[in-house]
Length: 513
Image 1 (cartoon, rainbow, N blue to C red):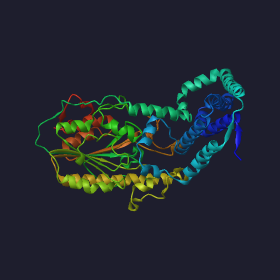
Image 2 (cartoon, rainbow, N blue to C red):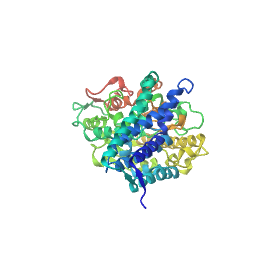
Image 3 (cartoon, one colour):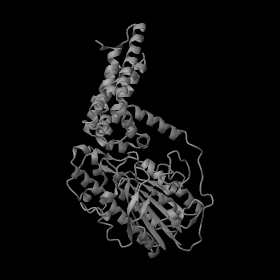
Image 4 (cartoon, one colour):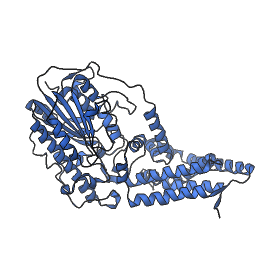
């Protein structure tokens, strides 16, 4: 016998279910309220929200549309609420971009029993129930009366409660406007359309640095640029971190300079990677930007540009215009898989060459999968992607093991560059963004920059230089505020590339002569 339900009850149950899955929204709201001073507001907030949902669903739940709309709302809300509750993230347009650019391996790293159960019981089963239940609308005239009575009745209830407390609600929403980002499924839908607009309606591609030339020089210049993944400065022993020695392999390198105050351009690879190679600074950069970058200008000026990538997200368009033979991707296994190819290329260098190494680094939540067993130095560890099932100490130890393995990799690259010789050589390492490890209930990365924790923005940055003149310049800036803003002009300056796009004030290598 087929299950039946009246349209009005169907509307109410959908509103109850969606409101219940908006746990993160109410958690955020109540964290900003004082229950002693704001008790009436705290009590009325869920009633207002539920009433607004009922009013909205009363309008959009039309015959033949009610089920598809309900299923879409449940699916979006369920999926979003899991990741928001489990990792403390926000589903904005940049997070949508991350999802769109991910691969199967990264998706699988998130799979765990909690996710499966959550999606099954709060997503799949409710959607199946909606699909197979029969909605009773009654006669057309009666349904229209019920629909409009429901819409205006719930809207009036929400308005009345709001108007009675406008002196409380208006300042609250003005001061906490970001609460809208927790509103499911509406904010993810807004974010998705914003992403589609940015991704598929791009402006005309812009060439820059057409005047680029390289100063004549007999010296052979080599730069190995290592773009790390998800490393945060807070856990770097070179920066004073004391719990674990995460820089065991580079701490005694005399020609290495660690920058103590470095910041990323974004909190996710999809933003930071294109941004850091862009001419634009963080304050100027937009994901809508569609133009050439530092690598294009270096190539035009005569520098050989090579991209070796082990990051599962590829190069985010940064290396798209390089010669096919100069781009090599690996299988997103251990980053050390790139070392043989690097060493081979170092035996046959051009006069001026930059080799970019894009790491898998410390990409979570499966931190334990980012390093081989011999680098499991700090224990106990969290050997699962379900971070909420591990204590803080285990999560930090596992993450620190990934940093140690990256430090080993950087050390091996420095050794290889030394062996390759050359007149002026440099190894420059920095992360694309940082990471949250459960502080204040927030995990991973990708929070909007304005509200992102410092751990997601403060990144490790260090540079090795073979010659004393360059080394002296780097040492003089080790405690200065530096960022991804410095990358574009520093790369041009290192190779002596002259162009109107170059900004000497952002060149940390000091325009090497």
